Image (cartoon, rainbow, N blue to C red):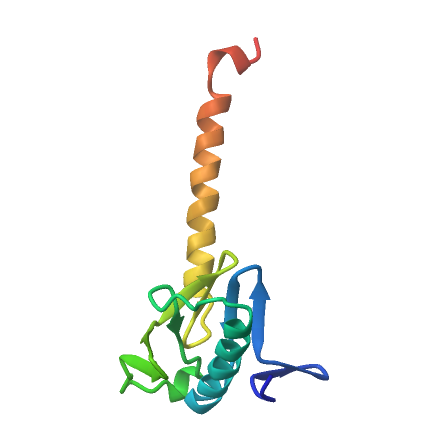
Length: 130
């Protein structure tokens, strides 16, 4: 793969892969293009196709430098990808300004839902103590 992405410790990370979920990580649009072309070439060797409808892209930037002039679509070869402000990857909501507030709110909402479902279950008379 292209040496790009982010450095974690001594490792350079430019993709997250789990089963058929792949997230390419680049510092800019040029790196994303290079990574995608490389991935598409490898996929073609194995006769795999990239689903254009399910494929999105997101540019993560620091809050202060967030580019408000957003490109709507990214065109690479014969593909056209929609830009998104956030997406869910393995149950974690990632967003373009690297703010975890949306993910935290979603987790709290799910915890509350579960709590109230369990609360109703334990309020049934057969489970009450005498």
